[in-house]
Amino acid sequence: MGRVSKFYDSITDRIAAPSRRTNVEFSRNARIDRVPGGIRIVILGWFGWGSIVFHVAWLYFALSMSGNKLLPILHGKVDWGTVASLIFWNAHSLIALASLLWQVAGREVISIDGVLMTQRIELLGVGWTRRFMLADVRGLYAFSVLRPDANTAWRPDMLRNCITFSCAQKTYRLGRALNYEAALRVARAIREAYPSVSRTA
Image (cartoon, rainbow, N blue to C red):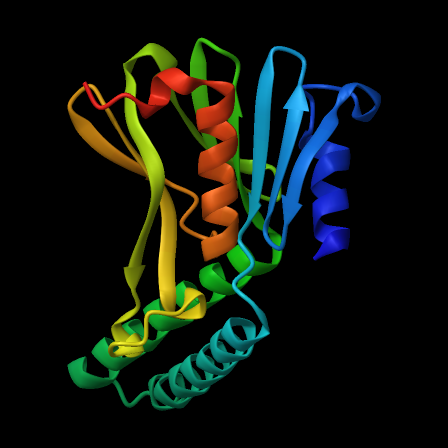
């Protein structure tokens, strides 16, 4: 994943030159940088090799099933059941492919400059951005919940983690790809740099 991160740095990191950027903390899937005027957090979409293998297998199976449903149609044997199955497996293929691409080349960038907190989710430089007035951000902390398959095992590897906060009476979540340790570090870095986000009212 180091190559992916360097590739992104070369084409989309326009906030500050590397020589002016100070690395504050680095963990497995998050990098926290102090840049002129604020901080910048880069969260990779990487969930680990287990997830990659799962999505590759899912994609292969979905494409195989889609191909099996397409053959009768190409030979003129068309019925609504076959068409529905083809659409179903094509949808699965698209979801699996999108999930795989996100883990290989996706990332989330959180930038805070003292006025705005900006969240950008992108894949190969293409994505969408939303902004929050920092003065309206309240109750920011690391949030964790047990995965459905965790049973009662409260272990870091059995948690789903993110950064949660409220803004304009709505609850938002950032960094859904964070592991437990990285979520704690990101929340701590933001709260230390901007103590106002810790307020609950």
